[in-house]
Amino acid sequence: MSNFKNGLKIFTAPFNSGNPVTVLVLGICSALAVTVKLQPALVMALSVTIVTGFSNLIISFLRNTIPNSIRIIVQLLVIATLVILVNEILKAYVYDVSKQLSVYVGLIITNCILMGRLEAFALGNKPIPSFIDGIANGMGYGVILVVVAFFRELFGSGTLLGIKIIPESWYVVVDKSTGYIAEGSGFYLNNGLVILPPMALIIVGCIIWVHRSINKDLQDK
Amino acid sequence: MENFINIFVQSIFIDNMIFAYFLGMCSYLAVSKSVKTANGLGIAVTFVLLITVPVNYLLNQYVLSEGALKWASQSLGGIDLSFLSFIVFIAVIAWIVQVVEMVVEKFAPALYNQLGIFLPLIAVNCAIMGASLFMQQRVGDEYHSFSDILAFALGSGIGWWLAIVGIAAIREKMKYSNVPKPLRGLGISFMITGLMAIAFMSFMGIKLIN
Image (cartoon, rainbow over all chains, first blue to last red; front, side):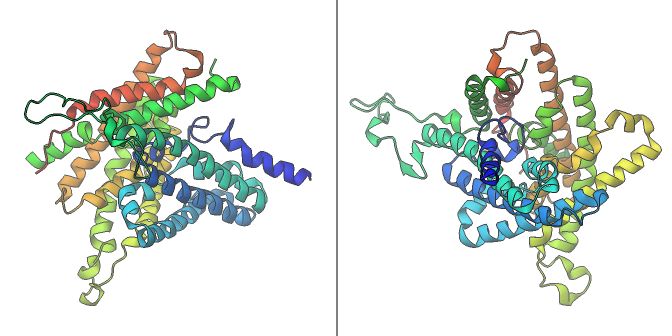
């Protein structure tokens, strides 16, 4: 029973007080760049979760045999191999998304969440808890990705996963002949700024703001 | 020469590593509390980029990309090793960072003391790996020669350096302002970076490379 509780604790930490993005400041590079649309964000979250889970598992199995002085290069090789596998699978099954993610799939290798979890957890724990820790951290990262992508796609394009959410009749229509807003048209326009890179940063800032207002222990002095 | 300057300016201001692609954000946020250390990291990143990107370019041109092995023998012309590029690039980066650390320690102890802990950290800085991957993606359409690659590496490094020194200076001043408690530290740094990125967006749409 205590085993189960321990596992649950490892699993839930990354969603709140140990969130890799908003608390530990790990893996931000890719978190921001792939969040213009919800679909690539989901694919990215899934890829990172798989890589963190399995790299934690593999390194945890090897933890007693890796010499301390070369551990970083061993970790990098394990991660790079997993990322190559993920990249080939993405290219084979979801080619469009893999094109959209472009270099950011390769950048999973240098995503600090991976090295951070390997150093902090997998090197000192048994394989099963390490695997849970990896999966949970990948998901904690994925949650932030999905929240940011949700707001950016909804307000930037008026869609979610490519499906129209905001009704067409709400949109402002410009009358081409006069150049003014056509009579009887709607009141809504997509916010072009949300799609641009700076807004991703500001949305993450807002998430941190909300998170730290609720969880006061995390606030800076 | 004209191309060199165009690519150089483009990678500093328009394709800025931080503001346009968010690369190297981890160390950018962690090491930007004072201008002095930010400056040290900026120099180290520029230095390492200037070595790793050209080396990875040569590897990409002569070993990894499709048909690149033709120089060795005609029969190897059909081999495409590009699926290996992630692992080769990261190995080259880790190796060069190690060599650079040893060389700098031996021949320039003053610089070594200044860079100190930052050098080993650079191996896992996304900006370094990202620059190599962007180089691989753009080679052929935008970059045609070795000097173009050098301009891109130098420009990206300096752009990153500029960004981290800028945010460090703002954060030093921000100590004296009254930021809402939950936003202090990380939250406000994100928002300031967002505002800086909006400022840099004014360069967008300028096209220097034909």
